[in-house]
Length: 128
Image (cartoon, helix red, strand yellow):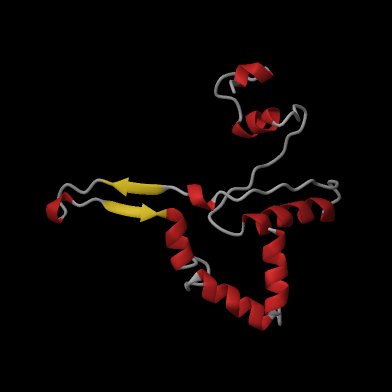
């Protein structure tokens, strides 16, 4: 779909283009995008808006983990010219940058500390 079909200039805001594609031309707002916990960051931003009296926010999140970037850096002087490869999503799953451990281990620790049962976790996963 071409941006001009919605009256948007070429190179317009990606968020504006996405909003136009689903038919909400007059809706704007911030876009939160990060490696992990995007939903938590979006809810935190909305809560801050409500807390400061700015009004109520609508929070919509999507998950694009499978489309995470893999970056290849050339290294002509490396053995055999092997490039350095960075898999942004998988690297963060393997080692959560905040706590320095495997993300699954971090999740299990939080569940244990907060006394969240396996049934509760499975219930949330079923909703997602």
